[in-house]
Amino acid sequence: MFLTNILLKKAKSKHVMVLLQSVVSGHKVTHIRERLAEKAEIIRYDPYLNMECVYKEFKKIRSV
Image (tube, rainbow, N blue to C red):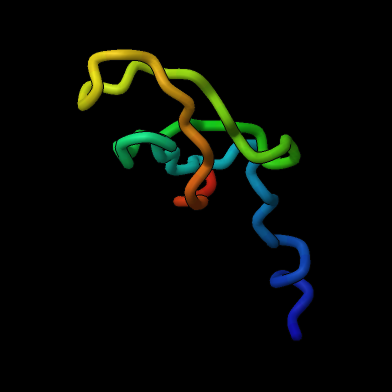
């Protein structure tokens, strides 16, 4: 193992892009949260229902 590989390691990013899914209709949106924060759970407008509902984190997509 070369010394350059150790010195040039990529640092982890501070934020993560996650996919949120509506609890009621299944509509999905993306959201950016901090890596160390708890799983995202927010209230957003759902276009399928024409009202606000709860969106829960479905899966992580990538680091930002």
